[in-house]
Amino acid sequence: MRHDSRIPNGLFYLRHFVSPRERADILAWIQTLHPIWEQRFSTRRPPPEGEAQRWLLRPVYWLGNWQFACLDYYHPPKGTLHRCVRAEPYPPALAGVVQRIETFVRKMYKGRDLPPKWAANTCLINFYGDKIENGKRTDTARVGEHKDFELGPVASLSFGERAFFQFVESKARGTRERVVFEQWLVDSSLQVFGTPRWKDQTFHRVQRVERKQKTHFNIGVPNFETRRINFTFRYVPEEHIVRLKDLPKEKWLDVEAYVRQLADHSPYFEKEITAGTTKQPNRPSG
Ligand SMILES: O=C(O)CCC(=O)C(=O)O
Image (cartoon, rainbow, N blue to C red; front, side, top):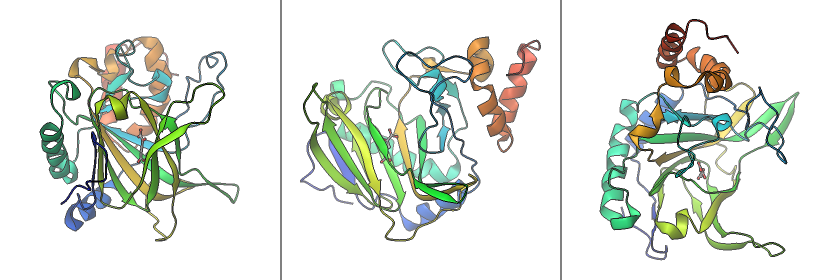
């Protein structure tokens, strides 16, 4: 597995990171998931000034800990409390790739670029494709520019159709943004980005996802056709991960409907809901 030497420092791209056998196991397991659609803000309060309530562009599933959008994601150094809710552990199908990602990251990043306890303990799974509403198909396979605020490198696995990925420099008022690096991410590849250059000084985004292979993954989301699946592995310090039952009441109410939806198919979240309602039996239902 060779790294492409045209790729700038701090960034890595390994084209055949996942073996065909691992790929088959991961894609068989993923069909057992029921990803959910989240809204960006709590449905119980008006959105912050200048923002509108909206659905995320794609269904998601988190492993390790779930960063609900309405809890405003993990955002150190200040936004660390009650943002990351303990979630299902990695399944056996992911064990091998997670171990290799951790070995690779610890070998390639050192010093200030690698937090001392860095581990790939958090994973966001993004499902890219078409939303189908009243017979109308809308391509939602993209992600606007953003940063991932978890400390240290982020490792990203891709399956399915190719995605066009860009790093852009922040826009100064009245000027055009500048694309500083772009590349296609192909099936079974691993991209890793770390260092201040790719984590702090630039944003990243997915501009589009092709349809050339006619890939359709069989995923348990009604009215959605998935053609690309992406896993981003990140690090959240254990002390910032909280059990559902330990969320304050307001935050519990913000996420309760999502967790109940997850619990319909996940014994893990079913137990977490039971633990939460047992701990605070008078908790009103949202
Ligand atoms: O799908 C990708 O390749 C990138 C996903 C991403 O930017 C993210 O999860 O933060």
